Image (cartoon, rainbow, N blue to C red; front, side, top):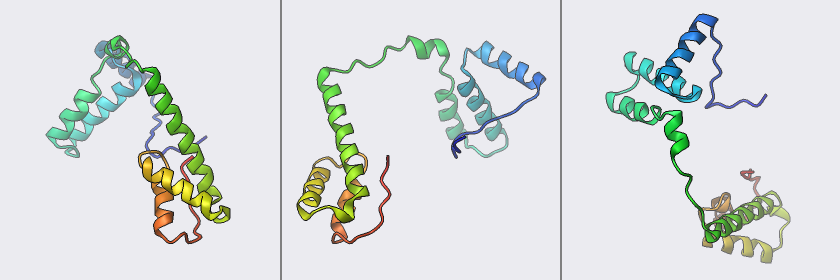
Length: 145
C-alpha cells in the first residue's frame, strides 16, 4: 500500500458507521465530503480553525452528490486537447532529460533549457531552468514523474 500523507483512513465501529451513513444520506454528501465536513466542524469546535477557515471548508464540503453530478463538465476544444497533449509530451521530455542530464550533449541541454524557458508551467521545466542557472553543474536531480 502506498502511503499518502494527505490521506486518512478511519476505522469505526458499526454504531458510528451507521450514524455517519445517516449523516451523509441526510445531507446528500459523498463519503469523503461528509467526513471532511464533520472533521471541519470538530476542528472548529476545538478551536483549531478560525470561523473564516471553517466557513470556507463548510462551503467547499457541502456540495451534494446531486449538485456535483448535475454540473456539466467543461467542454474542451480540439485546440485545448492538442495543447494539453503537447504539454504532456514536454513534461515527459523534461523528465527524461533530467534523469540523463549528466550525459546529455551541450546542444541537447540547450534545447531543453530553451523549451523550459518557453514553457515554464510544464512540470519539471523549473528544474531544467535551475540546472541551467547552476552552470550546468552535475547534480542529482529528482524529476517529477
